[in-house]
Length: 463
Image (cartoon, rainbow, N blue to C red):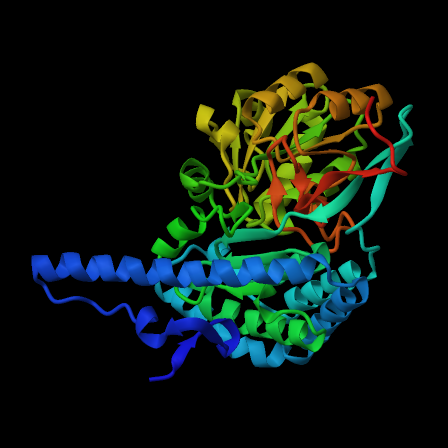
C-alpha cells in the first residue's frame, strides 16, 4: 500500500495509510478495547508527525524573506480567483451534507464559499502582501548609562494550532496570516467543511511551494476524528499557542483542557446603543445594518439599547424595518408599550437570558434605558466584551462610552459589523480575541508575534 496522504494530496512523512484507516471494530468487548487503543495510538502518531513537520517548518518561516512571503500571498490570491469555479463542487458537497443533517440556515450560510467570499479572501491575501513585514523590526532602542543599547525585536510565535467550526474561509485567513507573520500552523476545521477545507489547503500548499517555502508551514489535519483535537491542544513540544474559533461551548472545552496557551474568542453578544442626541436617520440605518447585514457573524448586534427620550421616535422606525425583514424582537416592558398596536409589529417579552444571548439569527433583544450611564452599566454587565457601539452627537457621551465600555472593540456612529480584521486593515484575522492578555480584538499579524529583548554592546561589562 502507498504512503498516507495529507492535506492537498501530499504524502505525510513517516505515516502509512493504515494509520489513518479507522474502521468500525467488531462487537466484542476485548476487541473493542484493543481497537480503541490502536485507534487513539494512530491519531496520536498522526498528530505527532504533523507537529514535528510544523516545528521544522517554523524555523524556515521565521527566517523567510519578506519577498518570499509576499510571493506566496500573491500566488494564493491568484489561485483563489483562478480556482473559484473548481472549488464550488467541493463546497457543494459540504453544503449538501449540512442541509441533509438539518443544520440551521445560519450555520449552512457559514459554510458557503461563493465567489464574493473567495474574492474577499483573495483581497485579504493581497492586503497582507502589501503590508510592511514587521518580523525582525527593532523598536524602542535606548542607550543605557552602562553604554549598552536595549530594544525589542518582533518575532513569530512559532507554531499555532487553529481549531475552528463551519467557515472554510478561515482556512485561508489562518494560512495567510501564518505566512505573513512567519509562523507555521496546524489547522483543524470542522467535519462539516472537510471537503472545502481540503481543497483550500491544497491551494495554500501550491502557493508555498511556488514561493520556495516549506509546504508543511500550513497543514490541515486530514481526519475529522475528535481525538485529533485532544492531541493538538496537548503538544507543547510542537505547538506554542492554540486559537479556537467557534461556539462558546467549543472554546470553553478547549480552554479547560489545553496544555498550551489559548487565545480565546468567546461569544459575540454585541450592543448598539442609541443615545439621546443620535441622528434618527443614522440610528435606524446603523441599527439595521448591525443586525441584518448578516445574521451569523459574531460581530452582528444582538442587543439594542435606546434612551427613554429617543425611544418614542426611534423604536417605531426600527421596528418597522425589523418586521419587514422578519427579525423577531424581544423587548422590555417599555419597548412593548411603545410598540403596542403598531401595524405589522410584534414584540415578544424579553427574559433575563435575552440580555446576554448570542442569537446568530434574526432575533434581537431591545431595552429602553434612562441614559448613557445605564447603557454602559448594562453593557458591562451583559456584554461578552466583543464589540459595542454608541450612536450619538454628544462628544462627551461618545468619549465616556469609548473609555468606560470594557470591550475589545468600541465604536462611535458605526455598525458593529465593522469589527473585522479585513475592515480594520489587518488583511485578515485569525479570530477576535475577548482576552485582555497578549491579543485583544481582531487578531492579525501582530497578534501572532511576540517581542524579545535585544541588547547591542561594544564590549561593555557590568561593574
